Each structure stands twice: as C-alpha cells, then as structure tokens.
Figure (cartoon, rainbow, N blue to C red):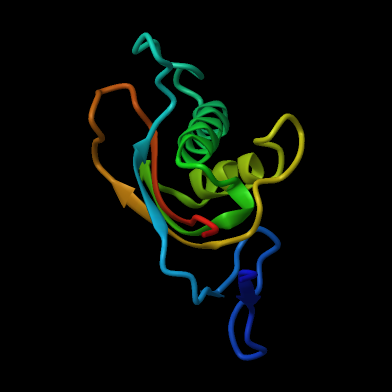
Length: 135
C-alpha cells in the first residue's frame, strides 16, 4: 500500500513537511529517539544544531533501515530541539534538505518541540519516528 501524503489547501505548506500521512498497512516500526551520537557515544556535530540534525537524521535512516524499511516510509516523527528559537528551527529545516548525502529527507508528518535539555548536556537534537514496513 503506498503512503499518501496530503497537504490540505487550508493548512500551511512547507517543502519538507506533510500535514497528513495516511497508510492502511498494519505493520509499523516505532523508532526510539535518535540523536547525533555515533555507535561509540561520540557526539557528531559539536555545538551546531544543523550538524547535529544532519547526523540525527542519518541515524534515523540507519534505525529505519534496520527495521527493514526505508526513510520514504517514515510516516511521522517528533523532533526535540534544545533551546528552540526560529533560527534553530531553520537549521533543522535546512538539515532536512541535505541530510542524506546531499539529498533531502522525504516529507512526512512531524512536530518540532523545544526542550530545555535532552539525554546528554551537549545533545541538541533528538528524533523519534514511526515508519511503515511493507508486508
């Protein structure tokens, strides 16, 4: 079943966001929060929201692929951004456009949530997601 992405005429439209994502499939992957930490717990991206967002999105891709699906099957995500401001939100949106070796992360339904802190003092971005697994 293909994923249907809908941006109703009476809602805001953004290139990297789908306001509504519909799927009738029954098998889903629920992906835990992915940050810019690598497999050795080294933080990628320093104190740069953009660089950490790119790495977090790449880690999300790794997790989604481990579940047997691909990023174009991500239906929804929640993005937590430390010290969210309009400039920080813009850095995340910019990262969405280039996160996959220069290619954009596919549009999906997501929410940006500003937080005071994440799991580690230097972590600036965390992303959890729900992805469709074709049966």
